[in-house]
Length: 637
Image (spheres, rainbow, N blue to C red):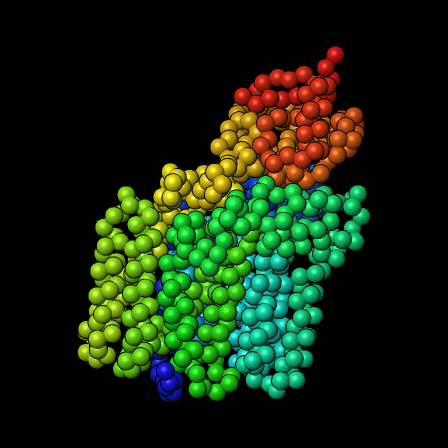
């Protein structure tokens, strides 16, 4: 197939400027309302991170290290930049559900805005509007931009980094390239090595398409690499040089080393499945984290979260590269298709083949790239609909979207059953009309374009509205309605594990179903009753920790209920070797811990088991609000 060189349209001023501003303002307003409405129905959302926000909003040391409690026993198992935003909000407006969740909603609005600006700059306001709408209406985006996990800030920074890269290609400016490096580096401080997945794309796009000469581009990239190291590494250096006795234990590591956390539990282990201290994830077909392979993003766990427009994005990326095949080397449209397409392909490949811990909500990282490709490609092809090949590309993208929406909606057969039929009929009908002719009559063209947009966005929009009107809580939330998977009951439990159903090997997650007054579990926070809360609060000021319990989610629930520090033995999974039995005995002998609460359901470690056994042998058990409690200041006779 030979490429065709198309002339670039020069947009008119005046009305075009007004339309651009009006469309941007409307998109921002709708996204703001969508992400902010009923935000408090999610409560604390992920209690694990909410407890860390409470600690960091009270204690500056906890703020810097990302500690789970104000007494700085252990950190969360991520770098803390995403917490810093919420903690500053909580310091300004008080610690409450709104101050914790609003920052993520605003990060979502900003992400949609950057996608609009990035696509509008080179493809026009209509393309920017479609791109932004696709991101805003992606179900997993609507979920995580209303949640307090690290992903919202990470996606904002990576989206801004992609835009800065394209501006660097446009101008040849080192400053834009430095900004891209700084943004990606700061993304590392939000969610560690996941931020670096896009680096090969940034390097290759600028190296291939940047305006300066090749040697100058190499020098610029080397300088940007230094900026990346500085932006991502300054906090790592400070933590590594800080005396370990004077800082909290690094949660998620097995040796109290931040480097172990970066390259082990949160690094290579996520790819290979060899995650020491994890709750599972043995890799391959038996992985707790789902089947791996090229189609992973389309299976039941991920499909309804992100995949609605992936087929269209890939088709439109190919069409965009075809359109720009004979353009000059530094063509900005080509740079956009390569930047966003590379972002989608590389990140999607990592998610598809990773054998370690991975959750469907991670796929929010793909939303900006999908939106940008769909917005840019669809409008570019629509403008060229007088060409048969362009029409076939566009019709194929629309037909693939309609058919795939039917498949996804068919996984929830009892939920809006007529929607899938309507999308299929409208989408295939509009696609057929696009393929049949250039649609020169304006009323007909407008009608077909409107029908195409409805068919493309109705499915994800319906899932998104279901998501924002439903309460979500726990460690693994899921967007949209419950999904029927082969051989199982519908998944999609909103409180706790979300839509990530039972592991393929038929096993369960420790503590998955337990979220009561007792220990909670590593996926669910504890929910102490009034009597237990009062017991923990009584005389709290005399102790460094009002209680200790195994696993961080159990501790988080008690912290949120009392506002007091609770020692999370073993960290998030209960498997970190902190504290040792000897250290715990020392804390008890010094009167630093008031109670031990049994019932935590983490994976457990030798140290955790030893501590629980020692406590049960040397202290008297009592039951308060259904929880087993030991007073560590009163040894058994």
